[in-house]
Length: 169
Image (cartoon, rainbow, N blue to C red; front, side, top):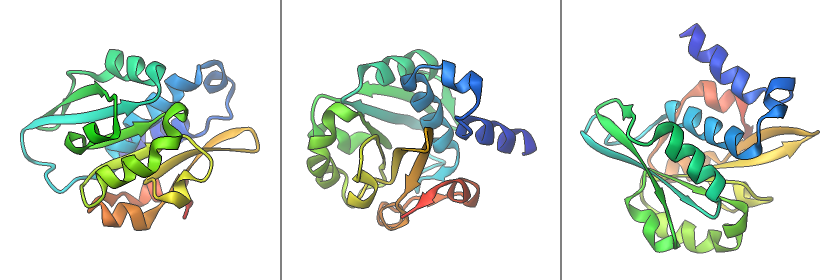
């Protein structure tokens, strides 16, 4: 347990020299993977696929695909999908919205409303607009916002360890 906490703290302490040498898409992919570890979905124990959809960032998609596609997640298996439109989000457990698709966030939010989908974004104001988790740079360091109302509406449970590291909205 201590190792897990140390790992997540080191991932979220992006101000270190080693983390700064990493390209942003690799940092986002690693953080996304670690977020998943601290979220509980209603159908967690069921077998099948755990689909992570990426829209608007090919680099994050390619990194996630290379690092995690096909790997086990409990009784499920990670499937990393490149999404072409907001309509394709409904089968996902996680949807990452890259900067180039921020303008489509309202459509994505509509497509995921009422479903147990963790939305993760990278754009100013998207945490307040209804993203579950939004990346944000504060004083030159990568942080993340957590919108607890959106998480609750999505019927997801966030670990207190993850909440304690977030900028809460």
